[in-house]
Image (cartoon, rainbow, N blue to C red; front, side, top):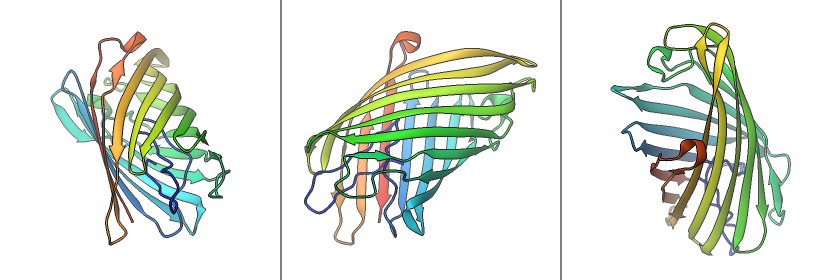
Length: 248
């Protein structure tokens, strides 16, 4: 989902950390993405994502495998299987790209320690990327998640719905160095009793940097670091976000 792209001598069309860009992988290009986020309370989340085009750039399949640290428990979270369709932005000179994504969320986590929902879920996200100039790119996200018969730690079930909105502004400071600021808002429902849920909100501002190393073999390595800061309903929360991807 997140990669830096170099088209000939043109500027990087960069992606974000907590948001999703609207550029599918080119034909024959596969990317391996690692992220790690540690929160103030010591909890952390690691994710591994593998993206690949399906025959051509217009269609892309990916999967995301999370490992979560929640309190004293560390284990596998719910795995995402993702399909994304490049609706707009296949041409190199397109200033606007649109690539809606649909995901099936497998209940591989454990609801007893809140590393999973205990049910199969479904997610839709609409990323839109806009190239404003040779130096500024923005990414916009809007999506929803629905999990029928999700469980809480007691095994009680209820349908849950979540919504996400986000925006990322990227400054292409140099061909292989970017500065970005993300704003991410989420609304999620938690199961509190059978057929009863409670809404929870979060709001993060995430400033960060990323850069690229292009090897002679054709592989591109992209490290990055960011510092998510909670505001509003998330006031007082902060952490560190690390990123590392390999693309060839």
